[in-house]
Image (cartoon, rainbow, N blue to C red):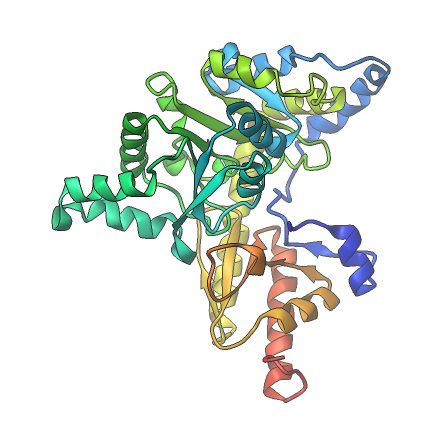
Length: 379
């Protein structure tokens, strides 16, 4: 179950147009150069795409200062997750929850046992506090707790910035995890699909650890920040020997010619990234301010530094609210399918200010009806 199913939502609510806050896609993209690149690439659809996506890999190599041979491209991050799991065939996988459902689906597809690591709605904030508090229990005890969690695990999935909480795993915590997993012989896949949404001072990628940690793999998405979900485009960074293994399990033509053209154009537009981040900062500030002033006492907003936030229902089910917002023209993400997220939550993408204004108006209208007795918030 994912967000962004507009066809289904349009059928459900009888609306041709919806503000889609259920999928965490940058509302200010794609970069302008992408449209021209698609026009130029149309002539190439009569040929098979380059199976190595070499031109795009070189562009990404220059953009992120990574060796070309450490980059593998795929039909979105989802394909790459399933590819590496099919190749590695781990017997046991550890997954912090709540998180992106495809990690567990991929694990189950090869018969892996899944070990959950509970984070709750605080996400990595809770874990980082535990890591910082090692002086109380001792470094040995902290290490031992991780060893117990990862006992027998071949692969650990991490996600930072974390979906759905939007929290970021601290550098010290990541280094600690990498040390323990290396000692245990457990590979690590760190999904950084939302990293580009962070401001400069907090945008620290695990890519810096690739040279010293051959058990580390880093996932990168061009779909979300560059607004290309319909084209599907993701990248995996890892040791070349691992990527050679993964290539044996991947469709050689999974990255189509239009996606390759669009990816290169997006990465070459250096102004787009900063302009989009600034607009998202303004939208987020507007939304948080309006939410705080709206006296929505039955709801709790969990702030983040990325392009989405959790909203918690404190006293009742949020299903009536979800349906009301849908009829109001705003689609949000029902979080009831997230394993390990107790309580009542929705996730909302941070988009342009008019979209956030529509969401606030929909929230206020719903609770005004509740106060007047026109809506049963508990149904």
